[in-house]
Image 1 (cartoon, rainbow, N blue to C red):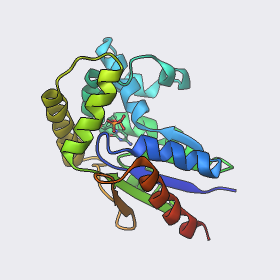
Image 2 (cartoon, rainbow, N blue to C red):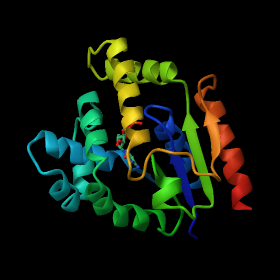
Image 3 (cartoon, rainbow, N blue to C red):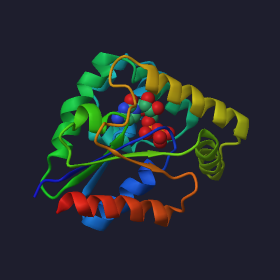
Image 4 (cartoon, helix red, strand yellow):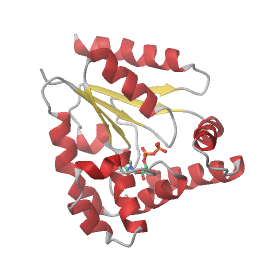
Length: 202
Ligand code: CDP
């Protein structure tokens, strides 16, 4: 059985949490495609060429520690502008989407570019303030003492770069359902996602 769930949206909107819960609910595999760009970004921070880093990326690179820092996030969104970097990562993502047993992929261009034929597409969003507050809490819990204002500025800068780039910009697909999680609990957001996917599966 093949079934692809595409989940896109801006930084720290709750895509990861919803994707993991949806994957667990249906027994699907989950790929956080942001980690691909973060892994390339981490290699670039270490001195690598972005295109070579993307072309030689290994699954084991996704398990590297520290991919979740805000420095890596910023460089990830800079390398993500590069069409050759994006091209190098397409096959891996499409192969993952087509795996037997179902797959959930979350990112920015899954419903528009990577899996335009996905039967279920969600665009998960929230206000910039909500998203920055959530990310600030996560970073603080990881031991990063970055200020709330800095996180908000970084989230806004990254969203702008992601939405305005020429290649595969962050965009809700025309046939995606939009879920604004600003005033939702995690349980409510997951329930909304599952209710939509249940309909798309029948
Ligand atoms: O976790 P968060 O929402 O903050 O970001 P992420 O999903 O880990 O993505 C990090 C960066 O990778 C984004 O800001 C995008 O620039 C880029 N990205 C992308 O261009 N396309 C994707 N499918 C996923 C991520």
